[in-house]
Length: 121
Image 1 (cartoon, helix red, strand yellow):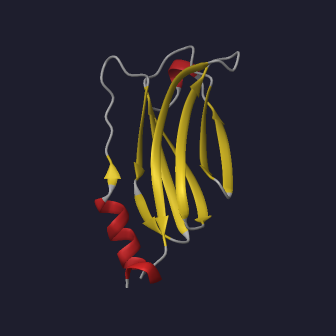
Image 2: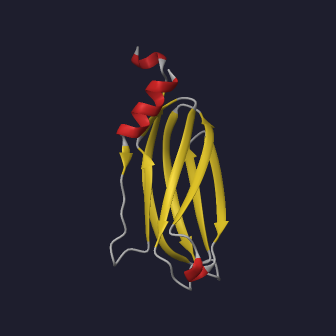
């Protein structure tokens, strides 16, 4: 079962690459088996105004959020976020790039469907 989860996640990753006009892109799966282990990679164009990235995973029955501080233009391009044990449900995955005042500089929204293994046997 673990192999199927990894294979399914690898096949369904939404690839993102930064273009010159983008500040933030996100790579995340669109479907996975429960309990989900979500890995979100946020790619940020380095800029002195970048102070943090906030990523949330939200469904009607579940909410989890995490925020990572950035060092402006000296920050790494890629930041990885992990959310473990997501129950079955439809999720909105939201990544927000914030400045020093907490104002949003960019946002990316993805959907995720965490499904039951029994449902697809």
